[in-house]
Amino acid sequence: MNRNIRNALAVVALMTAAVLSGCTVYGPPLATGPAGPQPASARRGLIQQPPAAASPPHSTPAPAAPPPAARHVQLSAPAAALVSMAQAQERSGNFGLAAQTLERALSIEPRNPLVWMALGKERLAAGNPAQAYGMARKALYLAGGAPDVQAFAWGLIAAALRAEGRNQAAVAAERKAAELFPP
Image (cartoon, rainbow, N blue to C red; front, side):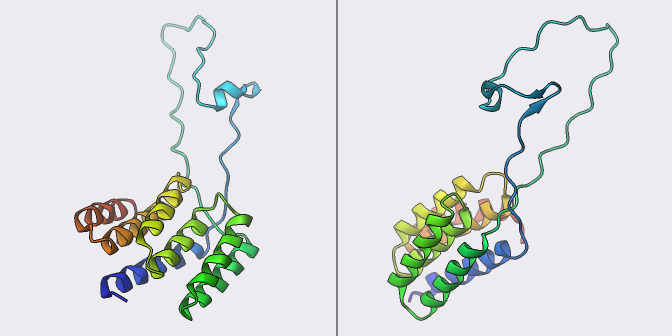
């Protein structure tokens, strides 16, 4: 196996292990307003104008809302067991079986970026950097609000690009990973 690919896989494996250790899953908060749940159009990002109200000329501004908390991602126990099994299969060189095992994990948690990154890492190790790139992009899409997971996805993207010989694009991806998760 090419030395660059081996080094990139080691970095991605360390990043994945760091993400898998001790994170929990939290979904997005339910959009509520002062009078309870907001209509579906407000939850979809459509801004509605509040009813016109007379405001006193010298009113104090409302306190700014705190920035949203970073989303934490974790695998469920069954998916984590399958990912662990796939990693053992990958270490023994059985990439086909590892891919099948990860696809089973994906059927359990199709929207979990950690499963997509594990499958992308396996595809990179199997010598399919184009597929690894696609899976890392999917993980990046699903990792919204989780900067550590986004950084690891950018690291996998960089490794896939480097394996394809696209070094300039790989450097740019590594820069994005470093911005999100400084060393």
